[in-house]
Length: 294
Image 1 (cartoon, rainbow, N blue to C red):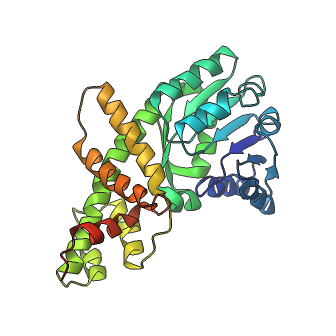
Image 2 (cartoon, rainbow, N blue to C red):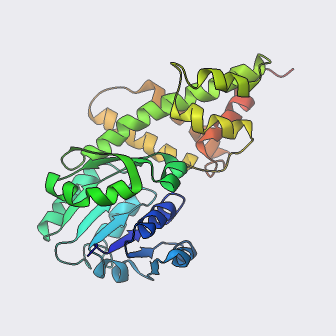
Image 3 (cartoon, helix red, strand yellow):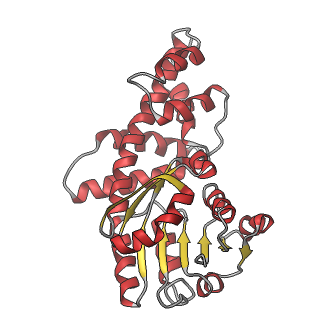
């Protein structure tokens, strides 16, 4: 008999992940702070819950995919939250990009009450969530990971245990550092190509399969060329990831200058109320800031 899953956080990525779990035959209870987002999934067979407690008490595995570390901490530790209402022997999987410190805190509390926890941040954006091709970076105990791996493989194609509690979140920081650099380079190359009078689509077809290939070039550059700045990944959430990166780097007494530069650009956009755009909207920043007025 398949384990019953509770899923908290049915936004852009969470909703697609729930649909994939349902399609694989799992019973999934859903909760979201905005109820209509969770209720919409009942069309696909999900069971809507009005509270976190209602969801948690019925679930063998509780998955969370929310916005910020403070959201994660709240839903796990508050009086009507996950820890106060979970089954004995439950497993908690946090897909949110959060902090290694919080991942370890959740892991220790879970052990204390006879449960288990994995930190499992993902990469691949809305497209990866829809197509079940996410990369999933996991921290926690090997036996719990082995138990959950068949479920992870419903959601992603590259699933790896990186180490103990917090290792998944540290790996996601590494992933984001690479992603921030690729994003800046992608936007800058499109910006240059347009200003050089080139056909950006032809340029992309040439450079996307060579040494310059990246996820950003393949998935985000076409959106820019189609004037599509809707979020697969919100700028405001990208800024959260950058803050985590810079805070962790400071703890290790190292510098991440590319991340710092990207953060400054996104901070400018957020101050202009553009935090709800997708990260590819960084192209608009380039147009506004770096183009000579002719």
